[in-house]
Length: 301
Image (cartoon, rainbow, N blue to C red; front, side, top):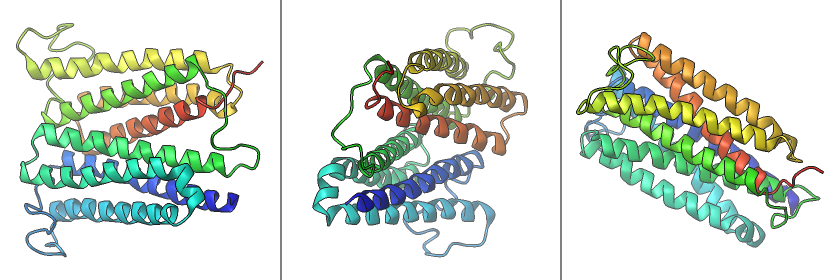
């Protein structure tokens, strides 16, 4: 019984890693302007194997990795569906992940057919993060069920600690989506200086792109404050992983701040865009995972 849960947990972690890579690859596709290199969907220039051109290959590779993630999710779903114990414990999370995956496929097609409209591209990113979170939750649930001394339905609520991490997760998601809006609206250099914007602390009314950029900057400091609070509330958790999450999360958000500053100063190079989203996605996984762990970690006495 425990071995079956452990096997599912391992497969779920592999799917999480591949989905993480897919999200980062999507940032590279977007920042290099390769999103419409394949103007049709699901084929590319009417072919299964695309023309050997850099932008086309980049977009096609994004689709190929997405197919790989879909196959991994299908294998995970099949493994859970054929086992009653797995289905009872993990079926809800798996159903949620499959629903989000189906929506992601639709949004992926719409990004091409709507010519990369910023709203669809941002929804595509947000849904990818929710799909990733569902996989993280499934992997954590299966891992917990595989432990001989912990039943999956047991555990004391983390109270305030859990709620603070949940708020931090929501803020992280919002901040990443704000960053997506900045990118898809080409507002990365709307404020070419830092910390000011064209020499002012706040843009003039009507400067939409400047306001978007500055809101994203302010959001980074709000998220930093929330993670400081989460770290403070986690120091009394019995689970050492919950206690360790605070310093790691703070380190990641500080790296994010540095990358964001250099992205502006260096005119938003592709490698910095990819690193910025990779760090943000790692932070997202960490806060979601910690919120789940805090929910079953009692306060140490």
